[in-house]
Image (spheres, one colour):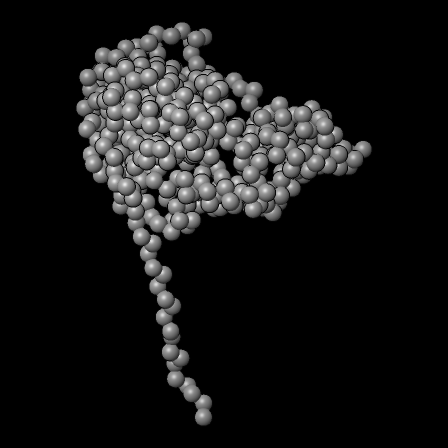
Length: 429
């Protein structure tokens, strides 16, 4: 007899939610904001066994002009978790070089170290060795490399993340913020040990060491500032005249000066769209029309912008006072390498190199389960393929080294690039 009844569906078991860490195992320590507390912390570290130390910072870049650290978090076997207020401590005369010396023998465990090292170096804290848990996760092929997802997938617990965008410059710091900050270093050592094991299993420990050293080097020797940073103002493409560009330039520079003086994020003082909207008025009208728009625009009547109306007006007048031959061009002359999408028109030979070699690099990255940008920096690859200095392996490897590629990267990709260049040369012949 045929059974025409609907089959019974057995519900799949619901996966249990991982537990959430609500506070460190040993509790949240009090905030260290006095010289006596700082001295005691340094003394506890000094001379201790040089085991890895978890390090993190909290900044207020969305609220303040500077990217300085407003909270430092450490966790070491000698001290447990320590939370330091660098603002109060520096004001009290704390010697952070003494802390740096006490930390010197230890490996610093930092998640996304490139985001934290600048503000640490600024106060005299410079690591000799780091273990970057985000970078390590990339090198072992993990797709989710944020601290929260990593802790959940590797350690099976969730971290509280609700204060990641908080204004850490405010004082006093609420207790729940301090709990959040302490948890960021609570499990770094466990995370490091697991990822170090994965690196070892994959034979990539040396890759990681080179990347970690490179991260420190870049932080200690940052690239020069971008020329004409005002050209990065949002919606600047809407400005159609050189006079309008002068308005953007003068307004941006005035905003930047005031923001620096008040230690306020420039966009908290005045949004980019206010500047470009004013500049488009300058495109169509003269100085009088632009000043009138300045007076009636709601952007400039906001609480933080309104006290500076005289400065904004002076910026507009300066833009209109500039002689025509001193106005900024609509586009800054640049010798930068164009985007590869434009290579077919700009340089067909370079386009052929890009279309021949980059897919092979991408294929290797996929085979290694690496993000292609970690296998080789996109800027390095574009620069080399736009204008290679030679086509044999030695020349390719030398150019890669000059452009900053690490030895492990050069070992993996130099042959691919050299072979591709040789094949193109043979086809041309």
